[in-house]
Length: 149
Image 1 (cartoon, rainbow, N blue to C red):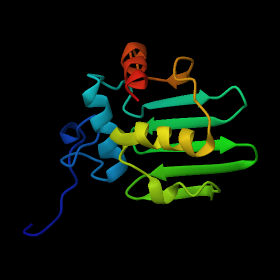
Image 2 (image 1 turned 180 degrees about the horizontal axis):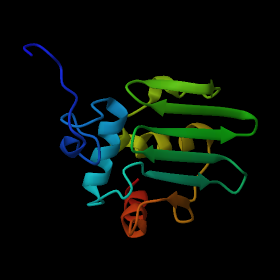
Image 3 (image 1 turned 30 degrees about the horizontal axis):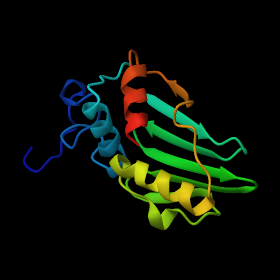
Image 4 (image 1 turned 120 degrees about the vertical axis):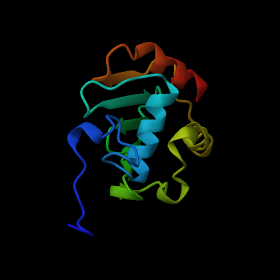
């Protein structure tokens, strides 16, 4: 039928969600680029990496990179900013630190991390992260990326 839209076959979809596949939005593209830059291949297709950086006084900065989005969460004392990036960046519940307007591209998250440290006169322990992921053989790639922040 002429003009009829057809759904792509499952075999046509790229496993990390590219414009020719299932996820043409900002969050999935940034996450896919992050994987590619580290030569990581996801198994299963719904993958995640969650990194928590902390300070001795209890401040925390979480970086979440998932197959369908990415985001960050900064918590200090009772104030929290939780920003997620799907097709757009948005505050997920709270933005007490007013970080939404400063949301960088995922590849530039290190600059935001340094800005938060400077603004709050703190230093995150990048050498002692808590990393959770369902990616196999990703520990070295994640550690190298963290050191580059």
